[in-house]
Length: 232
Ligand SMILES: Nc1ncnc2c1ncn2[C@@H]1O[C@H](COP(=O)(O)OP(=O)(O)O)[C@@H](O)[C@H]1O
Ligand SMILES: [Mg+2]
Image (cartoon, protein in one colour):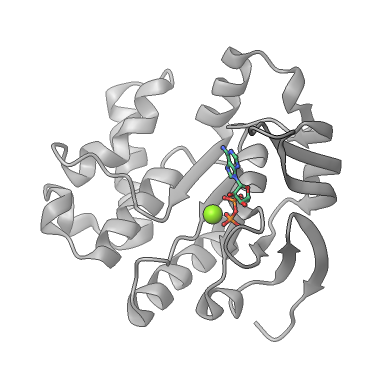
């Protein structure tokens, strides 16, 4: 524990556009420690998704350094970064991204098909992940038979099934009502407390923000605040 999981040193991100490029992140530095339950907060367009995509090795900074689990991510080959993602990083998106033709069980099993795991080992991991999110009884259902809150819980199970070190959740409650938002936050907080998985959220939802132990605020691609919250 207390190892630095993500190290961001003075990164900028410029998206190529017609006239010279758009500066989406401006000289940002941030360290995230193993076991944190933290969020990137800021208005729409402030650079939250850009930052999460870079931490998740889905995109690269234009300048500066990013280390994830001690590895310089822009020095990894695409095969190495795919392996880092497949083994160590879980993703949760605003729109769940479940595959409609597959059952809940199969959706949760999907990330394990990228790993060398036997069927029986996969079954154990899927059942454990479904238990973490309280959806064992829905394992044979398909996504269109679930409520929004249940759908997002399936996507938490899918992110957790390989017991990653790090889960990245981009506005996970944006499509949920208050009750379901609180329910999925309780689920993620419990996982964080029970097995120490690090969670990095992006959000501008006050319901999410009150759960976070640390809040990093972005405005126009700049880090303007980094606060630790107590009393949670
Ligand atoms: N591929 C892209 N090309 C050009 N500009 C982009 C691209 N992706 C995002 N942006 C711009 O970068 C800024 C930050 O976007 P984003 O990281 O998605 O913000 P947030 O997630 O906080 O809403 C926005 O102004 C957005 O329009
Ligand atoms: Mg976004």
